[in-house]
View 1: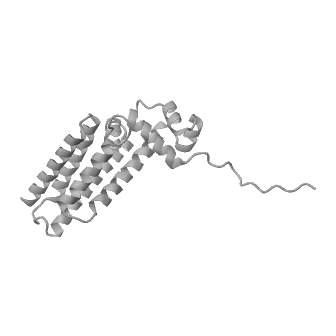
View 2 (view 1 turned 135 degrees about the vertical axis):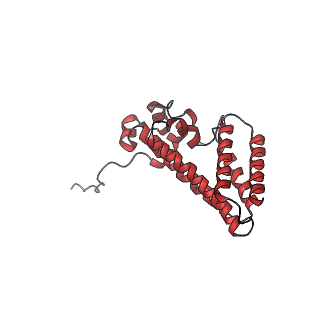
View 3 (view 1 turned 90 degrees about the vertical axis):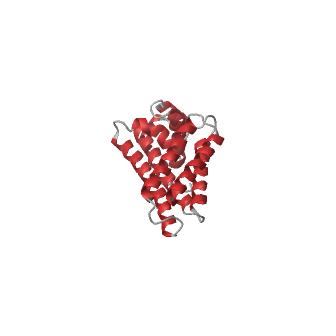
Length: 208
């Protein structure tokens, strides 16, 4: 008598973890830039062959957009969390900038700065979808930092005359500058000094 084998589920099991694959692709794009990263590079980074990459994510541009959007979402969520922690404005901003510098200097080899700024600025020219993600990232940071200033105004730490939106923009510009300088090889002590100066200047302007 032949025993019946157990029924197998239909379809083939997914042979990759999409989250891990996107993270590995992001590393390749971050290190080499979008244009210089080939499909062979992405295959090597993710452990997926070209047909599998196309089936899972579409073409190279589609995979890059996925990494870019995920990074934008994570960056804004992390910023919101950091700025919502208890403490006065100076403490809050010092913590946020310290975390940003840690992120810009993380990874093996040379510092890579911010993934969005480092890879998307050039590609945004002529590509409306990449430009939209870049726009959302910049304006999202402006809003979150301006919102932290507004919270300090609402709590009586800053005068009601302080311009929360403009001061948030200044802070956003400062953190973008740190991202670019870190990628250019500026040492940590210099980045930390400039961050302290930027925060102190904005707090002084807010209280003026």
